[in-house]
Every structure is written in structure tokens, then in C-alpha cells.
Image 1 (cartoon, rainbow, N blue to C red):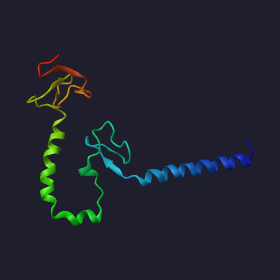
Image 2: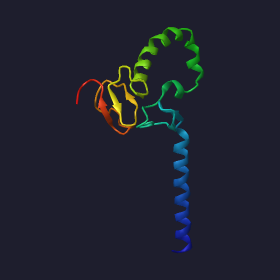
Image 3: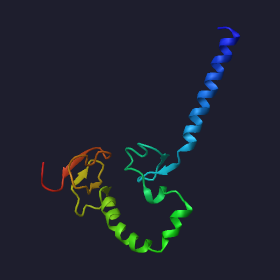
Image 4: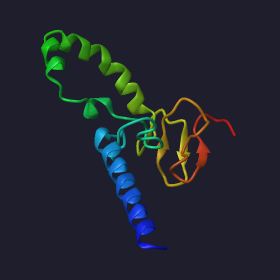
Length: 129
């Protein structure tokens, strides 16, 4: 490889690296529902319960203006959030759908995917097999 070819190769690599860095800088960091962080964008927090919008919302000035009606809206959105929080494995057996192999109790509504991150289902608490 001669000097001109090396120079062109280095130029291409530098430009490519700057494009990758610029693309990553355009996307904000978001917080996933399990507490981890990821680079925002399509597919962010996949496998971590999705993006936790309450922690990842951008702090924009226009969003602060309609703060007066927020308490009523917060009361309405609290119930669905609590329902989503219930679809998880906990140590509380009350109302659990399944007992996981690691000793946790699954509180989801369907058998599909139950205890998937807890070693699988040890036993179904709803009497099914």
C-alpha cells in the first residue's frame, strides 16, 4: 500500500468515526424500567421492560407550562403504572401466577414468559400444569 492509499484510508476511517460519534451524540440517554440506562432511539431498553418515561422525559421549558392540571392527570396515570409494576417477580406469594425456580413469585396475567429471567417456572400457583 503506497502513501496516497494510506492517506485515503486514514481519511475514510476518521470521517466514519466522526459520523458514528455524531450519531450517538444526537440520541439522549434514557432510563429503562429495570433501572439501567441506554442510548435512546428505536429499540432502547429492549429486554429491560421498555423505557421508563417518567425518568427519561426530557426537561423542556414548554412541558413545564401545563403543570397546573398535572395533579389530576397524575392521579389518572397512577393506576395503570401500578398495574404494570405488578407484572413482575417479587418475594410476595399473594396473588402470584407462578413460583419461579429462583424462589421469586410471578404476578403477570399470562403463562407465556412467566419467570423467564428467573430460571423458569417451578410451579404454577393457579392450579394448572
